[in-house]
Amino acid sequence: MNFVILAAGKSQRFGRNKLEERFNGKTLPRLGAEFALKNGASNIYLTLSRSSVTTDSKRIYHPILEDISEVCSPIIGFQSEEFYGPGAAISTWAGIINEPFVVLFGDNYYSGNLGKYINVFQDETDNNTYFTTLSFPPNPRNLQLSAVVDGYVVEKPHSYMQGDYFCGMIRFPKNCFEYFENLKRSDRGEIEITDMINMSPSSVPINLKEIEMVWDDLTYQSDIERIHKLIINER
Image (cartoon, rainbow, N blue to C red; front, side, top):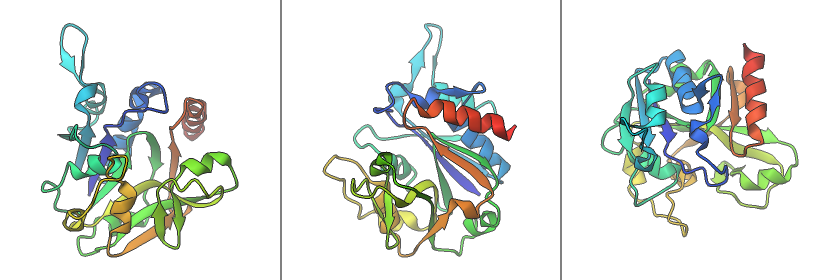
């Protein structure tokens, strides 16, 4: 069971590096690693940004790597400075990962179990791409999300205020990098993760309510309190 944790984001809308925000003393990437280990991870691949390497005048270190290293020894990859976006963070592992893998977003909260999908996700003969979704009632904030329309994921369409949206995680099959070779950058210079899903020969949406897990997303500072409460309620 292979997990890729994307922790190379720049947190432009958050105002500071949200990947270093702590919940009960732990960052969300660290909590993601704990979730992966609980669900049978044999390998954890961690995509980082070189720009987040820092120093305290005594040593050079990466805060996210240091936090995750308390629970596991991840395989490290640095995202290319030439490209950006979650898709670029995944492309870091082209030619390295040759088995199915599950993508977790470093700014998301994951807890609980994958349930029946643990066996599905690690099946090397299963060539489907699985991605999780949730249904949301009308809310202007939904305009910033990627809608799921007729089985396709539409990157921030700014036209859907309710319905099904891509969120949570993705499971890619072992041969996925073969069809990623034809990916083109968007007008913003970003490798879109939604293109990776839509280019898959067969993609299967899964409503998160089917899985025995808890999920949430840290996008704005106003989300911090909600995730803190979510963690407290689980204890």
